[in-house]
Image 1 (cartoon, rainbow, N blue to C red):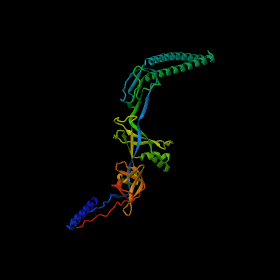
Image 2: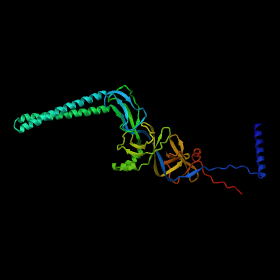
Image 3: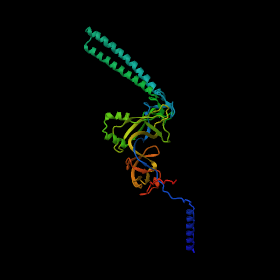
Image 4: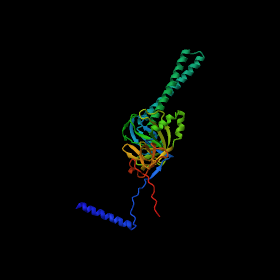
Length: 376
């Protein structure tokens, strides 16, 4: 029964098709469509090189006291912008004031002693000229006068040292910048071994990063001399700083230095990019990415949809003369624009490759078909 039913349906379908053909009704025809392709060529492009960087102030100063004593006053707050010469901390100055007064008193006594020794020396010299006293007495008085002069010099130095110590009781900013963490509190006993804060001079900020090995190799291959480094740096493109949240800092920076020694462990050089910080938006310790656009000449650029990823390999489908596709392994580099790859190896200028639909191509598949001309 089943075989007869299938046969009956087959005869019926054949009859219908024959009838439609007899009535000059065109049946839909299957047509093969071509994949989109492109012929690769070499061109010039700017590639963004990205380096992980950490921001540092132009002058990051560790603030420590020069004298010991009780911290009487903290004049600033964490994160506060300060100017050079502004008072930051005040240490108890009473002992330093007493030391200054004692030193000044000792200086007055030394001056008096010097004056007496001077009078005695001048008197003995006058008597010696008149041959009333011996040379022994003259020499003794002269030595006493010189010793008194030395005592005055020592007393004057003690006064100056006491004045300096008194000045150390008021700690001021030696650069303009931003106050960091303040780990001490009013009333604490402080000494030169205790860090009060870090003052980050943030008028200009530096982003420090390691230059990639490819750039190092280029420098070595070109046999760059020390005298050429400055010229090389001046010709580097401007840099942009992108923060971790993706925000791009509005002011561009310039590379200011490259270390002269390659790190043996990483094979890289340390570079610094200087960024102006007029609004104080950059702080020491901020991490982000330094982006620099380097011009590359005569490179092959293809759309990302032409590259098929297979585990750790990349390949494109090259169109042969018979319109069939052959998988070719390539090495690529991101062009940084979100849509293209730079082909480093595997293709040559003039090769034709599949672009749109590359993920659906199989090895040896025909990908180009002649266009079907409609009959008029």
